[in-house]
Length: 254
Image 1 (cartoon, rainbow, N blue to C red):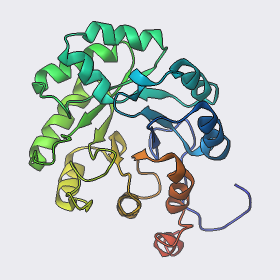
Image 2 (image 1 turned 90 degrees about the vertical axis):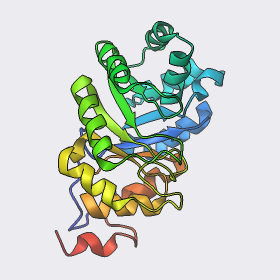
Image 3 (image 1 turned 45 degrees about the vertical axis):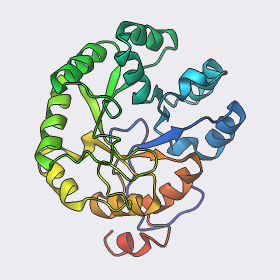
Image 4 (image 1 turned 90 degrees about the horizontal axis):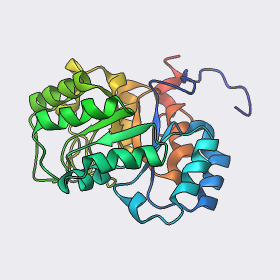
């Protein structure tokens, strides 16, 4: 850091298992990535190329190389996985992962219906090839799962080989663990945390209010995802109690 301040919350160091910041790249150019890394690289743990943007990105290999040279792993959004699965091209998907040298993959069923046992089989197969991050929850706002179903699915996916679980919210932050207003479904989160270790969950939190809520609940080292590139530095200041939203939350507890 640039100067000394007392009573700053402890932050885990990269490469870390908790306190992750997952950034959503929805189509950044190579120059934009270079600029992002220059300013925020130390605070970015992993990057998701949103949904299936990797399919239409013309300079994909070059983008991946820039992230790799900065020591930042990248994975393709779960919608791309689903696009291959629905077309019976799972083996082709595995070859794509190898072609681009990816070390992570996301398994989701937010846009299509996959029997959960089958989803867990995909997780198991891919976990022998890459590190799997699986997403729980639907992108359909009309599909609201009871907490026990979230817990059951999360438990099974961890047992199948997932490294981390993503709690779905879409890039807009208004489905899954959130109401359509963006408000956190607090009862759902509380129930999940009674059974699933917090360090195993990446909470998608694209909105500042959602980030603040989870940091106040679980501390500076909560895993947060779907962070916009321009919000990486602001998020880090929220984690450290250096923004008004959490300023007083930490100062009297350290």
